[in-house]
Image (cartoon, rainbow, N blue to C red; front, side, top):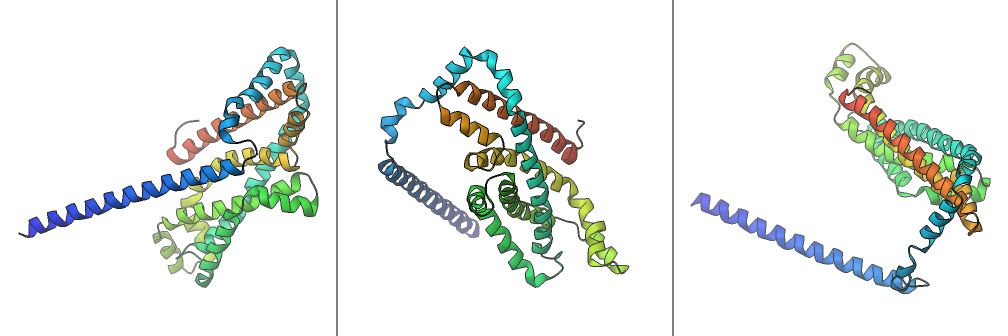
Length: 281
């Protein structure tokens, strides 16, 4: 009789989960449809009326790039300093953000924090940094500091600190506490316990996440160039703003940006495999 009751309870729970899952799907679809209709009504041209022209701009860029293919290498050479600036922005912002994220993670992890009462505060700071998009921070900083790479570095570093603080704290949650207990038993200070007992355990995952974030920040730094933060995005915006006659320059910048992202993605992917799995480079 007990087995029958257990089976009936299990089947009832399964039916309830299916009903709740179906309701969630219906609600999600309804919200998507209503949101699309509201956005389409407020759009100047309308989605369906402009759908037939969605390929016009790519076609113009490709056709002009093919017609002026001999000019592409020269455009790439002229855009190379901007590409280097974009990479510098991403690298510096990633480094600063990961350093700040490490500090936030150490202060937000229960059992590792130097001041346990500040754990909720550290987590909320990380949430706030992570919630505000880079472009919003960059626009505010550009208004205060003017255009250039500095606002982009600060904006990306702030967002990176929030994201890495969250990821690093989750890594810290899985740390083996036995080495820390052993260090504490011989009188090690908090900083010594962290440096000798925690960092060796989390360093591979930290570096893996940092490399993954570097890929994201390269894209972010290119996007921020559109709002005046410098780099390859600024050059791309200028080329696209001039329109016909400059599309070959825009195509060259597209190709250079794509190549840079692919190269960094491959290098960081190999490095992450090396760090996490010990695979050969």
